Amino acid sequence: MARSGLNTSGNGAGPEPEKKKLTKENFQQGLRIFRFTLPYRGKLFLSIVLLTLSSATTMAFPWIIGKLADTASGHPVRLPNGTLVTINQIAIGFAVLILVQGLISFARIWFLTQVSEFTVRDIRQALYRKFVTLPIPYFESNRVGNITSRITSDVSVIQDTFSITLAELFRQVMTLLVGVVVIMVVSVKLSLFMLLTFPPIVLVAMVFGRKIRTLARTTQDELAKTNVIVEETLQGISSVKAFTNEDFETGRYTSSLTRTVQAALKSNLYRGGFVSFVIIGLFGGIVLVLWRAATLVQSGQMTIGDLTQFALYTIFIGASVAGLGELYGKVQSTLGASERILEILDETSEPTHIMPPVGLVPTRLQGHIEYRNVAFRYPTRPDLPVLRNISFHIAAGEKIALVGPSGAGKSTIASLLMQFYELSGGEILIDGQPQQRYDLTALRRHIGIVPQETLLFGGTIRENIAYGNVLATDEQIVAAAQQANAWQFISAFPEGLDTVVGDRGVKLSGGQRQRVAIARAILKNPAILILDEATSALDSESEKLVQGAMDELMQHRTSIIIAHRLSTIRKVDKILVIDGGRIVEQGTHDELAHNDNGLYANLLKLQFELS
Ligand SMILES: Nc1ncnc2c1ncn2[C@@H]1O[C@H](COP(=O)(O)OP(=O)(O)OP(=O)(O)O)[C@@H](O)[C@H]1O
Image (cartoon, rainbow, N blue to C red):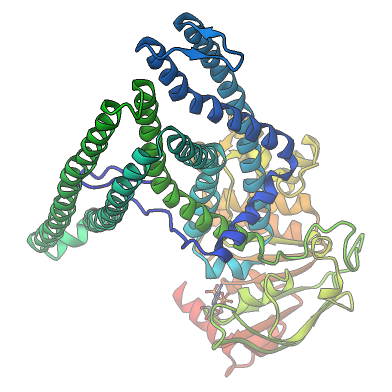
C-alpha cells in the first residue's frame, strides 16, 4: 500500500512494505504464489473474461462520443450497409452499453472477490499451519513480530493484489495498448506529435515521484524516532525523574523533532516542485497538442468527432500511464511479500501429525529413559556447549530430580526429551529405542509437561484444562481438577468451569495456574512427566496444595523434576546434580547430603541458611 506520509501528522507513519526489484527471477519466484489460486481457477478465468469485456466496453465510450459529436456537427455516421444513424439511436446504443458495463462490473467484482478471499484464506491457513509445525529453533532465531507480520501485512498485500492490483494492471495495460492503436487510426500525425510530447514529461514526473517517496520515507523514519523517545521516556518515567534528566530528555526530543521538521520541509520542497512541474509540463503539453489538433481540424484533416475521440483516448492513455507507475510499485511490494511468504512455506516442518505415522507408534510407553553421552549446543549459540557428556537412566515409574545452579542446563536436559532440538552428540533412548525412531506426535503424546510458568489461554477454565485432551468429557475434567486440588477454587467461582480466565477474565494466582496445569497433565495421562518447579515462592498453603497435586500426578509415571527448592525432592529415587552442563554428582538425597564437599550438600546448606 502506498502511503504519502509527506508531513509530520503521523498518519501512516509505519514501515513501508519492503519492495523487490523487478527481475525475471523475482517475477517467476513471486508468481509461485499463484498456485494458491488453482482451486479457484474457474472463477479466476471467468473474472478475466469479464474484465476484458468491461475494459472493452469502457474503451468504446470515446468512440461513441466521437460519433455523437460527428453526427451533431454535420458529419453523418452510416452503418456498413449504408443506413444513416440518428443521434437518438447512438444515444440508445450508448445507454445499453453502459447498462451492460455496469452489470459486467458487478459480476467481475463478485467473482474476483471470491477468488481473492478464498485464496487469501488458504494462504493464511497454510502459513499458520507452517508456523505451528516449525521447529522451536526457528522461533528463537526469528522475532515473533516479524513472523506475525507475514500472516498479517504480507498477506494483506497479496489480498490487495488479487482483489485490486491484478484487475487494475490488466485494465491499464489494455487501455494503453488499445488506446494507442485507436489514436493512431484516428490521426497518425497528431498521435505521433502527442507521443513525442507526453512520454518524456511522464518519465520526468516518475523520477520526481520516486525522489519524493524516498524523502517521505525519511520523514516517516524521523517521526518514528521521535515517537520512540516519547515511548521510552514515558515507560521509564520514574528513571527519568530519579536521574533528574527531564531537561536532558526534553532536549533530546526537541532535537529529534527538529530533524523531523527539516526532513518534512525538504520533502515538501520537492513536492511543491513536482506540483508546479505537473502544472507547467503537463498542462503545457496539453495546450501544445490542442494547438496542433486545432490546426489539423482547420485544415480539414480531422473532424470534430475525431478530435473529441482523440482527446478522450489521450486522457485514458495518460491516466493508464500514471496508473501503471503506481502499479509498478505495488507489483514490487507484491513480489516482496509473496517471496517472504513462500520463504516460510518452504521451511522444513517438524515431522509431526504425518499420516500414516512415521516410525514407532506406541499405544503405551513403559517410561524407561536413558541419556547416552548427550551433548548439546543451542542452534542460536552454536559456539557455546550447554550440555556435555550427559549420561543417566531412569527405570519406568522412577522419579529423578535435576538440581543445580541457575543456568546449569536442567531445563535443557528436559526439553531434549521432547525433541524440541536436535542433539549435538550422543543419543536418548526411550523404552530402549532411540527417540528418533518414534513418530514424533505419538511420542510427544506420552510426555507431559508442567512448566514453570503456566500459560493460560483466554477462554474458560474448562477449555484450559481440556487442552490436555480435547476429547475429555465434563466428568473427566472435573475428576482431573479434583485430583489436581483445583476443584475447590474452581467450584468457588459462580460460573465454575465456565469461568473465563486470561486477559479479559479472572486472573488466577500462580498456585491456581499451576494446579490448572497439573489438571491438564492428568487429563493427558502421559507415561513420562516433566515437572519444572516454579522459581517464585508460593505461600505455604498454596505450596502444600500444589505439592499434593504433583505427588498425585507423579504416581506410576516416570518423572523428571527440575527442582529449585531442595525440600521438595527428598523422596525421589535419584538426584542428578548438574553444574556447567555436566552431571557432577548423583545419588539419593541421603547419599548426597552426607558428602560434605559435594555441591548438593553445599546447596542444601545455602538454602537452609536462607530460609
Ligand atoms: N533457547 C535458548 N537459546 C540459547 N541458549 C539458551 C536457551 N535456553 C537456555 N539457554 C542457555 O543454556 C544454558 C542452560 O540453560 P537452562 O535453562 O537449561 O538452565 P537451568 O539449569 O534450567 O536454569 P534455571 O534454573 O535458571 O531455569 C544457559 O546458559 C542458558 O543461557
